[in-house]
Length: 84
Image (cartoon, rainbow, N blue to C red; front, side, top):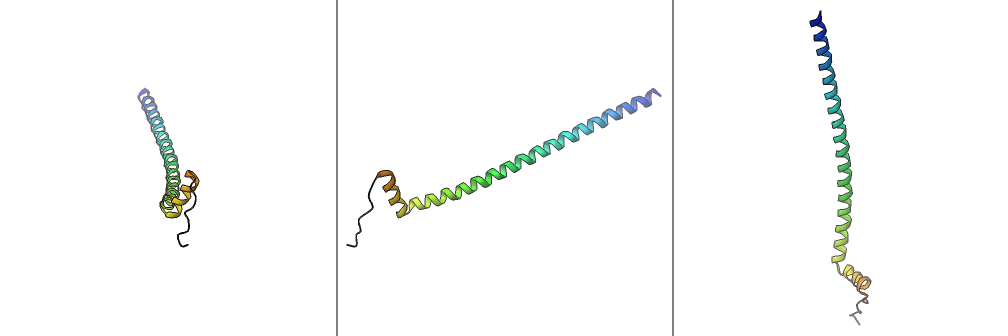
C-alpha cells in the first residue's frame, strides 16, 4: 500500500515538473516571438530611413542640391546666368 502511494506521489511530482517545464518553454516561446516582432518593426523603420537618407544623399550630390546647400549653409548667392 505504501509503495503504491509513493509511486502516485512520484508520478504526481513528475507530472508537475513536466507541466512546469512546458509552461516555462511556452513563456520563452512567447517572449521570443515578441522580440522577433519588435526587431522586424525596427528593421522596417531603419530600411525606410535608409531610403530617405539615400534620396537625400543623391539630391545633395546633384548640382541643384549643392547649390541649395551652398546658399543655405554658406550664404552664397545663386550662380549668375552664363547665357548672357
